[in-house]
Length: 378
Image (cartoon, rainbow, N blue to C red; front, side, top):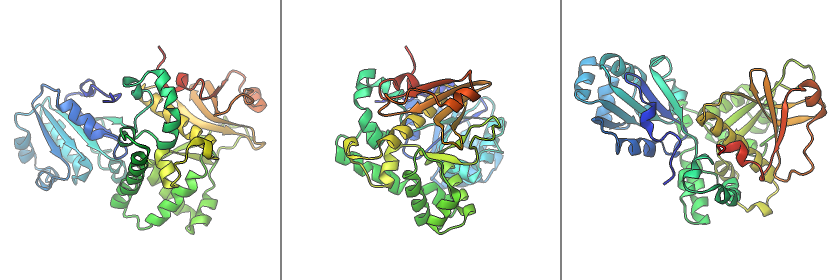
């Protein structure tokens, strides 16, 4: 079994605060919760958000009934909490009115889309984001040599738990299509009542072919036959739903630097490949550079998130076409990274980067040294 970064979960719990675990569907939030409940010594009540009587009880916001429901329990755990109307206000009642109680709530991205927990639980929650399995989490099963041997598979199929545990290539492809087809847009379609699901799929396909390139909203709008505001709205929804990840342009107010555009990456390579129905092996593909860049960006994001390593993340490009794939800013410290699957002729930093930011670092991340970038160092 793959040990997730947040295990054991008990270390993140605080009395009279809600521990919120959210992230994409099918990444293992329920399994993470169930593993904790199977080991805790606290007396707990476990509820599922789509249980109608429980929905009615919590959404009533009746303090007396809610207190009776949880009387004698030290821990309240609710899975798929986004299905409960008024869930944020209900959880606020619980942590405000029941002394020393612990609360765990898991939910998909619709928490964010529907704005259900933000304001009611201000100052009363701790949020953990669970991603598809990180390369660092695979160290619980494999050593670094084995991870390097499996790298090509991850570039093609991604790291959703159902896909990693699949035994055959056919199963991996089937499961990737199932996740993309059945779960990818479920929250957006349910909570935002977006009617244009074909437009959303069209947008995802366009983004899938532009990995590592700046996106033009006008161009996307023209190709989809919608206006720019609709494109921007759809991109925002896809970002909040953990389907895509946006990277903005870096600048310290130099007129020659591009900042208005963004790059978009998929949270998972396998989902990106499912969107375009392309699972050929690397030697048969012409998009290996894009797959590598998408993989390494998201693995770095996972690593920084899980290790609480705070940084502002960007790409960098000038109007004269000098560029760096990934920039991390911590205060005045700048680190630039270029991602190259076949790296040997790309070792030199762009001259305009060196001239503008002489104190900044520059590193080329390749298949040879990538583990130093996405794994804890021993």
